[in-house]
Amino acid sequence: LAKTTQPISMDSYEGQEVNITCSHNNIATNDYITWYQQFPSQGPRFIIQGYKTKVTNEVASLFIPADRKSSTLSLPRVSLSDTAVYYCLVGLISSGSARQLTFGSGTQLTVLP
Amino acid sequence: DGGITQSPKYLFRKEGQNVTLSCEQNLNHDAMYWYRQDPGQGLRLIYYSQIVNDFQKGDIAEGYSVSREKKESFPLTVTSAQKNPTAFYLCASTDRVNPYEQYFGPGTRLTVT
Image 1 (cartoon, helix red, strand yellow):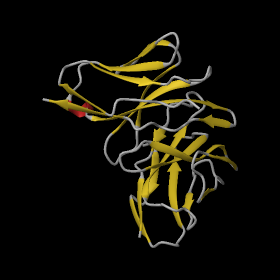
Image 2 (tube, helix red, strand yellow):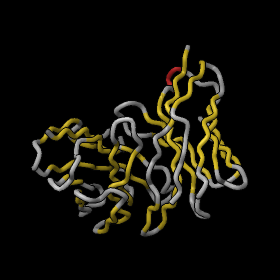
Image 3 (cartoon, chains in turn purple, yellow):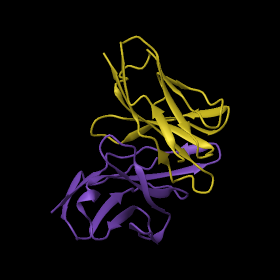
Image 4 (cartoon, helix red, strand yellow):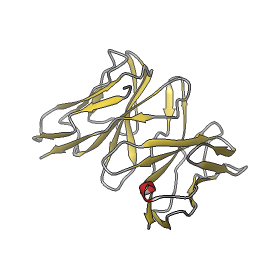
């Protein structure tokens, strides 16, 4: 099963771009990579998902190299409200299976004024 | 408004008692999930159900039971066999269009003494 490793914490300043990298060396061929944001005492919120190369939506970008052994979540111009824990999740959901839907310990991002 | 509701937000029980946590969704999602989160940790999958009247064990199912009699509801029972039941419990659901975009409820914080 794909185990994920992320930095425990990161600090940034308002207006900066933040990149959070997740390592998943034994990712399986059909696994997808998903990122979530969680505020204290709340359920996580979906940010972005991808399989390979680059994915961009209105809030973030996800960069996945060709070997797929890592992925980087990029948050452009962070604000104080982006202070949260960010989780990388790697796994496969298919009919009858939900392999490796276990979140890692996450990265605590603190945005400073 | 569509979403997932979990009740109650806080729950206190004595050791040795079974307790059932409620999870309801009006998103018309087929799949539903239960996770457990301990302080400073990521989420761990307890059970999931991809269709009514069917469910599978996740990584930490021992001491828990579930039912899926209706599409909208996926209650979790924490039995007295669960050794360390005190935790934050989160319910999520997904649709078929994007099974990786999980919608989470607000969570139930269970304290067993």
